[in-house]
Image (cartoon, rainbow, N blue to C red; front, top):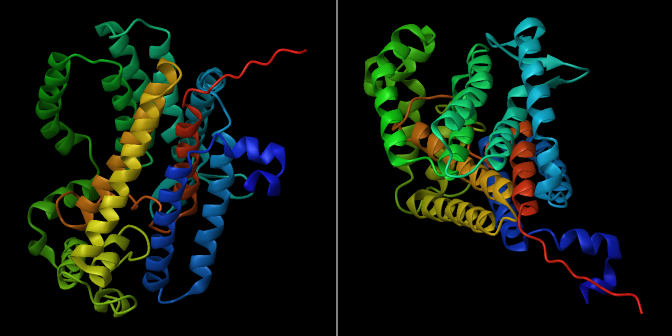
Length: 370
C-alpha cells in the first residue's frame, strides 16, 4: 500500500532507516517540544524553531542512513583534519560570547566542537579498523593522542563539558576495540592521581567553583549554588504524578534558570513527576539499546566501533545532564539530548543516529539478466 504512494527512490531510501529507532526518536522529540512549550512560557516561536531544527536533523539522518560504513570510512581523516583546523581558527579569530570563544562567523555562527562529536569517534574507529584487534598498547597510545588533540583545543575555548564528551566518544571506541582490563584499571588509577593536579592547575576558577558547589551547594544559595538548589526543588516538588503540564511553579515563576536549555529536565520532573521521569528515562534507555543492537549488526569493524561509540555517547549525554540537574554531577552545560532547546545539538544527534542506521549490514540481492 505504502509502496504505491511513494516514489521508488524515496521508498528505497526509507528501507535503510530503522523505523523502530525513528519512532522512538520522534516520540522523544515530541515530548521535548511539549516540555519546551511550557519552559518557554508558551512562546510558540521557540517551539517552532526547535521543530525546524528537528526537520533539518531528520533530513540529515535520512541522508546519512544511506551511507555505508566503507564509504564513510574514506572521509574520516578529512573530517578529523578539517575539524582540527577549524578548532585552531576558533582560538585565533573565533567569536566571543559570554566569556567563551567557541564560534566561527561565516555568515552565521558555527561551533566546530559539535562537528568533532562525530569526527573523533570516526577517526579512532578508522584507525583501529586498520589494526589487528584487540589493540596493542602502542595502538592505544596513538588513539589516545588522536582523542587528546581536539580535547585540549576545546578545553582552551573554554568548554570543559563538550571536551569531556568528545574525549569519551573516542574512549568508547578504544574500549569497544578490546582494551584489556589491566589497561582500564591503570587508566583509572592515572586519572585518580592526576585529578588533584587537574583541579589545581588545569581548570579555570569558575570550573573549580562548580565542583566545590556540587560538594556543598548550600554554601552559596544565591550565587553558585542557585542553579542546583532550585533544580532540586523543582524535581522534588513534582512528587509522584507531577503538578501538571504548564503548572510548574519553579519554572513559571522564574525561579529556575536556563529552564529551556540545560535544566529542562527539572521542568519535566516538576510537571510530570516521578512517573513521568521514569517514562522519559525508559524511552532513552530503549533508544540506547536499539543503537547498540544496530551496532552489533555492523557490516565491519569500523561500522561496529563507530555505531557503538555514538550510542554510548548518547548515553553519556543523558547521564551527565540528569546527574547535573539532580545535583549528583557538577554543572557543565550539557543539554538533555533531543529535549533541550538547541539547533546544533539536535542536528548533530540526528545525524549521529543516521550514521548508526547506515552502519548496519546491508542485504545484497543479486539478479541475473535473462
